[in-house]
Image (cartoon, rainbow, N blue to C red; front, top):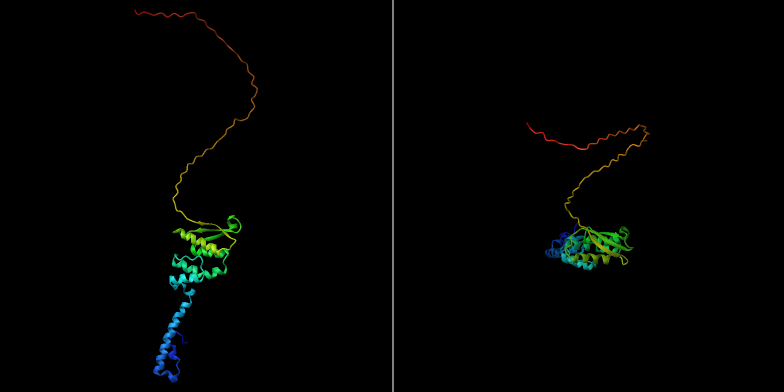
Length: 218
């Protein structure tokens, strides 16, 4: 099957004029223009070729698809993600899923928690578990702006929370002391009656004086 990218015009010339030199030259000139047009038609397929487009063209597509929270200073990967999902977000804008997808486009780890999941006020929500680094306040402002234009009017954003895992070494000491109390109570018994005879004796001695004499030597 002949395709437009091939030199097909010369191949389909009628036999009566195919050998004419002027006709062949005209066919070649027209084929060159047709091939140029065929190459340009690839530019019409924008979204399927989004990863191949230049950053300047991505910025223009963001304006065309009304990406209200588009950040012109973001990296090219995030820009492509925002443009790629713009049409889908406009279809179900206001739904919690749209808010979560927008947050995930800016921070992949972001999760939306509805008010009943954390005991909040009805029609309120939070965006939590953001693990990516925050280079400056502009990123936070862009995320908040993205949420505001994506959520429904009656919903209110309570807060943005960030999750950081800190690695540290914890040292602890423990003293073990065991104490056991043993209570020993006297046996309970009845004292029997004791009958006995009691004898008392007494002696008395009196001495008036004691004389001590020195005995001389012979």
